[in-house]
Image (cartoon, rainbow, N blue to C red; front, side, top):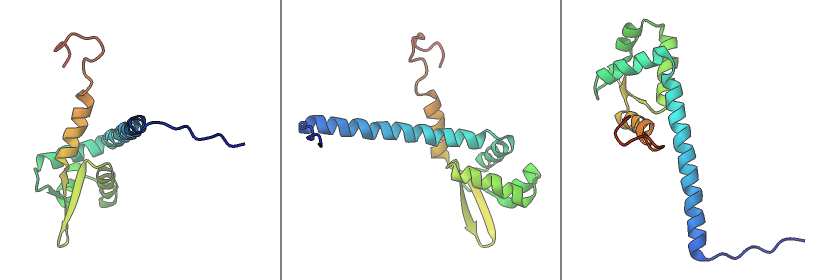
Length: 129
């Protein structure tokens, strides 16, 4: 025998919906930042990202990056793809050239995420961050 659905008020339904959406957002935010940190956890990818951050909003050509990190093109391509897939870098094509730049908004969000809960568990205000 099937149980009868429980009737809840509109306010409670909206509150439950909001809580579910918030939980999904928090989980997806955690997963997104974990993916970004994972991409940055490789020394070559971190060096690449630091190089393209220094290049500014115009970015750096793939050849410039390759000369900087001294990798074969196929290996460099793999690392660049990982950074792009993680959302910390962008690419644009101009003719036969590919330029890579940092996604500064994503990097700011990542660093803000790392600091957002600083000192919330009992440390004196301003003592750690």
